[in-house]
Image 1 (cartoon, helix red, strand yellow):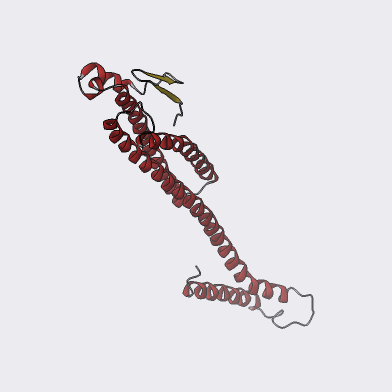
Image 2 (tube, rainbow, N blue to C red):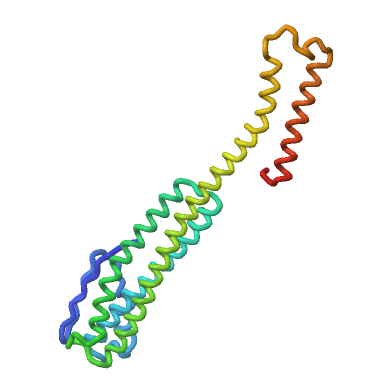
Amino acid sequence: MEFEQVSIIVGKNYILSFQENDNDIFKQIRDRIKSTPGKIRAKGADYLAYALLDCIVDYYYVALEYLGERIEVLEDQVMLDPKPEVLKEIHGLKNEMLFVRKAVWPLREIINALARGDSTLFQKDTLIYLRDIYDHMIQVIDSIEMYRDMVTGMLDIYISSISYRTNEVMKVLTIIATIFIPLTFIVGLYGMNFKYMPELEWEWGYPAILCIMALISLGMIHYFRKKKWL
């Protein structure tokens, strides 16, 4: 998304417009002036100023569509694979929307002042069109606020997803450690260096201990599955 400053000077019978870059956002206005003898040629400079402002506001909808598509992609990434790179993209998108909001808000106030008839350069029949632009600006700002809430919600979802994955890993490790606790106890018990211990001289002592340890492990796994911990 590219940001550009556009300045418009409105006089009684003239308009001056300045752009920072070579992107000609007013090309469609000039095409209308050259091709069709409509209102834009019949009316005065105030109507042309309205047309220029309306063209600028239309580009805000293009930016909103772009932001909405990025939000949809990031939502899928947050739900399926919340990597640290996704968090950086979310922060970058949040900063972009903050910049857009700062750019849109002053224009809303200017158009509101013009629509109220504060300027003598705009005729009464043109104020109706300015009020229409003002309604569009309200929609743009509401959409930006909605997108900001969605991005904030994505941050919460990202943190929740990371916490959930961490809890799942910790749960598996805890279950493994829990299974090995009784096995470690048995190994430690028969690892003591006492001369007179039962089962030490028994021929089937070693296989019996292994079977007992296997039964304990399987029994605990079955219990965990029954409790739906696995």
